[in-house]
Length: 181
Image 1 (tube, rainbow, N blue to C red):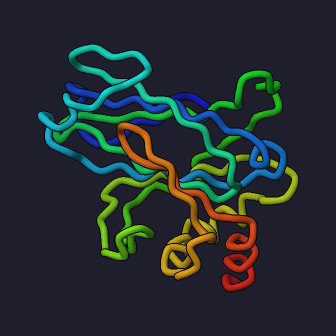
Image 2: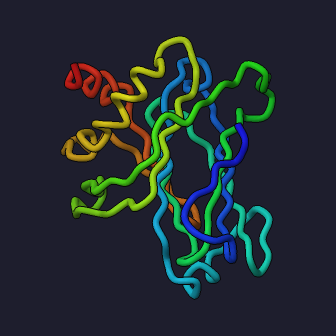
């Protein structure tokens, strides 16, 4: 998938490479990329393991849950872009993605239980044997139900310098699909 960029002129820029791993590679699913601006001063303080210069910082993350959310920050007045790719060693010819929705959302943060604004959000379907594009569309409309769940095992959160990765457990995915019908 070619990089997808949103949110303003490209002066300062956050680039994110998202490696997709099992079980999402086989089962399919959806990745929601939610971006929010931070001050350019705070952005400059972010440490990166990827490429970086005075105007651009690159970050790399890995997702595996068929229902994954990647929240990232980008410099206010700047831009961000992201690219989904299979983990190394997987045949990239078999890897199919499609952006199915772009928008924004107000959601309950799964950690703080406070309402947060995601002013820029993209939903990407990852092709696979189980979770089709229709499921990904349902997930994109109701993913925040899982955030409201009080069961701590329903959602996992991993942090990286420019944000966090939120993954739903298999049990939460099953409950979510059942609740969505």
